[in-house]
Amino acid sequence: MALDIVRAESVGHAAALVAGKDGARFLGGGTFLVRAVTAGHGTIRTVVLNDGLGLEGIDAGETVTIGSAATMTDVARTPGLDFLAPVARSIGGPAVRNMATVGGNLFAWSPYGDFAVALLALGATVSRVTPDGETVVDLGAFLAGGPAGVVRSVQFARPAEGAFRYLKVTRKHPHGASVLAIAALLPVVDGRFAGVRVAYGAMARRPIRTGAVEAALEGRAPGPEAVAAAVAVAAEGTAPEDDPQASAWYRREVLPVHLGRLLSGEAR
Amino acid sequence: MAKLPLIFTVNGVEQAEFVESDALLVDVLRDKLGLTGTRIGCNQGTCGACTVLLDGAPALSCLTLAARANGASVTTIEGLAEGGTLHALQRAFADGFATQCGFCTSGMLVAARALLDADPDPDREAVVDAISGNICRCTGYEPIINAILSAAAEIRGAKTA
Image (cartoon, each protein chain N blue to C red):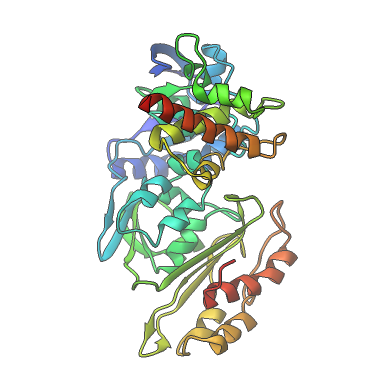
């Protein structure tokens, strides 16, 4: 199979190349795309490299900005991103983490894409470049489809200390593909949850927010009653798949248990 | 198919090849350069048998387009021994029965080398993490973990002796 490898001169140039050629893809770390090429997905005929475009930068300020070419290793090593380091370290072994990019993770499908789950809970937006220009879109809308373009970066407001939680369940330890992943932003204002966001991985084809759990928690005081209310609706709106990690049935069965543990702060 | 020039350093020696545009690094290492110590297991980034060091960091050569290695420095399992003397990790694997069928051993050793380069005194948890992308179906991992810890101690001892 012929595969054109193209180096772009700028992000805009990359977007034009991807949009202008049938079967063109923008290559991040390659942990999904090269795998697809090797597997013989003949629809991929051109690969535009992300090398040399300056997309690796990370700004760990009050607004956190992560370039799409930043790797999981980059995230895990960045001072000030301690709350995200466990997410980055939960993905693959060191070799995968050295390759897999934040931008690429936005295109992963179940049982992968754990970093996107965290970003969804954090309320991230995506800066994407198309031939029409650069736009900033909500990550949820981005994951729902539409023209992906070339992702320049993701950004989100730094969460309050201790407000972000993440849990990943795997069969292979210490790292493996997800049976499920849960990320939660749980701000507390005046003793009650306010602005709750909870996202699941491997509970649908792509990462999803769980509106039922968010509604159950919002406005409640943290504690056993809030946990019970959330656990009661844990599986609402989910559509997990069967795969070698777990069956859809199993995922639905264990989801409430793990959500309860995450919300109550229990160790696994 | 168009061929691309690839100039890179492998185990300290500069190499120049023309490669197919969709060639994978592992195929160039094995088929062009004859460095067959790097294994192809799953060919989809799951087993870690193809692990090499790319500019000093572990990478999966089965998921790396060869074109991306242009200008890079690659270390394979053949680059661990120096002057015919096995690396301390290799000796520890042999002495500690950390290899059975041997298919995963190259990737394990390269992953372990990266760990010890970065952290000469790793604890057991760090060792487990370092080889967490490498699958072994024979040993149950314990002899491998013990061998890496043993090699780390030997290297530290040699440096302080």
